[in-house]
Length: 360
Image (cartoon, rainbow, N blue to C red; front, side, top):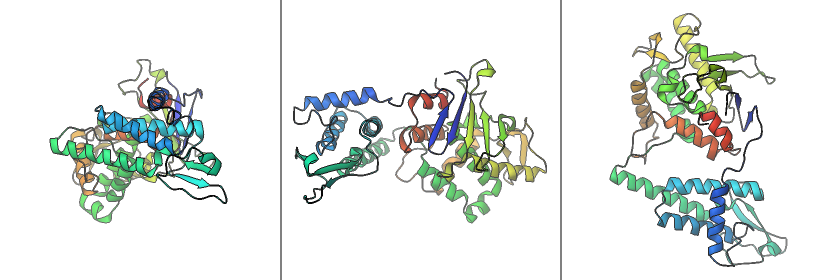
């Protein structure tokens, strides 16, 4: 896609061209349906007509893929695809899967499989991917992979998710952490993390930001601040700078620990108060900060130092419990992308993900 503007709003996205493909998982779903048909006539329609058989066949399908050597990451993508398919095709929302009998009929619970007349006795509600047995299976697969990677010290590219962001931000806001690390370092790191998570940036990219890349806008109709950011230094950026994407960044009131607006404004206010002047366009947005919180606006913060601080803060915040590798410089980029594509209720379509991440 060429340049344009994409807006980051709580729970929704808007693109100059609104014709976005909201079913990027069609091939994965077709493969799952083909597998169901191989199981015989009793189970062939498990993904076409939802019933107690649907999560049963889903478990069998995921199990067969694991036997073929597929990793947890692969089958997690398939789980997410099926979840989206059930939402799109059957309006299966919610984080549960249960049978609700019609008035005057007996109740059946999880695992009461094999009844071909569910629709006569009641209806299934929720999403089949939240069937208790299926969720338990996915958790076990994840734990098995993590234990295996820990045993063999395998290199794993870890992503920082929103739960991790919450632990990290809460740790950096503790009075004892501020006293030990310095207020400047705590505010700077929160702003770097929230910006990299929101814009899907590596450390090398986020540290290239200058104040001139940020443009503050008049408060919106709700009186809330917002701004735009351009990334002309991104590897995928076109040579023609007029085609550079412009990213609208709004308050994320439903996800405060990943809110780029508040974290960045807190940091800028502190830096300007510390320097006794407003930041200029040529000043680095995340400048060098020494051990006593003294700023050098003409030099960027060190990527090596940032990486060391990330792993220190992550360990202190207990983010690395049951993980076996250091976090690398792309963990916020991967985590932010996965969060928008997989984990939020209003998932972004693939076309928007590619645009926002600079992959198109």
